[in-house]
Length: 478
Image 1: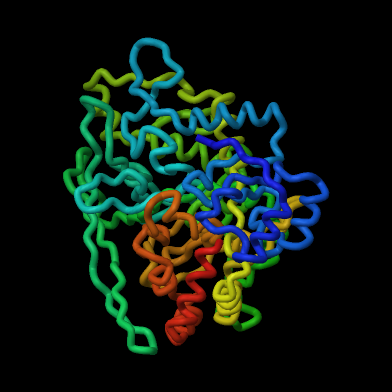
Image 2: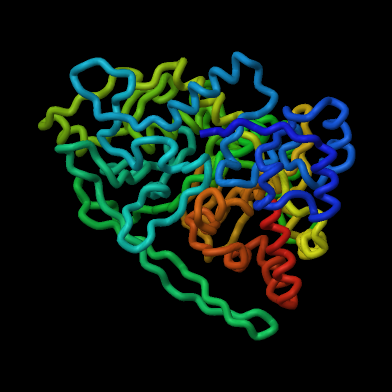
């Protein structure tokens, strides 16, 4: 639940920042402060003195560094929008039921699904992780495709299992399959001789329920992403994003980001992709509707038909399966979830005056991390600091899923926004990073970088341990 913000005087924030480098995760007296709590004069002072390094989301920032940090509404919402936000939150938290012959606005789950609610993947609006030993896969999933492209250049879905493997099914319906993960150790060392061990995930799909998987099936594991600041990213102009493209690497710096153009289902055209691990969704609206369908089997006005393959359809005809209506989530409900997803605040940075964090930020730039993780972007009237360019970059063979996604190759991934990454442990009780959660901490995340980021990774490996720690401390302040 979203907690009520406490009113405090901004001057105490400034005073505390001078003493302790702004606020830390244990600073309970300012944990719940948002910009709506300060007067216009105080907000002006804050924007002029601290915003470039403190307010990651501009005026859509919160000072909460607790386990509730990702759950705050934008302070810019009107009273009417706050009501709709709350309605969206309730649907986001709703555990969908199996459809029955009786009417219900809460049914329609499945027949195949990865989860029965949005929040069970995005716990506290945060980041998912791979399953631990003995756990089922609940906050990550596998995308599936076979060689070739669909009508709109999209990945070609498996004939028997569709475009996403769903590990659960409603009662009396057999499941699609089960996934298990093992890990291969990859050893390496820093220039100072310190040894590290990375864990490469290996995926195995067992007990297929609807025929064999095609021999050339491609899989792409994806953990659920955090929700903060999505609306701010959507409000970055296409012109500003495209200005960062350098497909032919004209400046010869080894970095050549490119945009992904994907199918916009409602507007029936190709549009700039900016959401998802490969920028394969053009809007929050389509991202949300796609998740309802793919993750829970809930139809919406955008995707009004279940994704059921021919073998599955033939099987379901022999059962008592019924759907929850067409669509199972109506336009009003979908709009409220979209408004909720667009308007979650971004936690401000912490401990910004800590000398080690300041030095870590310098190192971040000196080894060229900031060439892809762009610090400053304009989001309509806000200057924000998401640390992303929203472009695709070749990350090398070690991170490749070898599965094309619209214009993204099998080794290209969107630059992940870095804002909020320092709070995963507090909010979600883990520090798993990268698209499949393979990195157990931020150091491992850097070490997995290859391709266009390989030079930065090698420079990181050459740093003395003290400077490596300063860089990590900076990232944890985001």
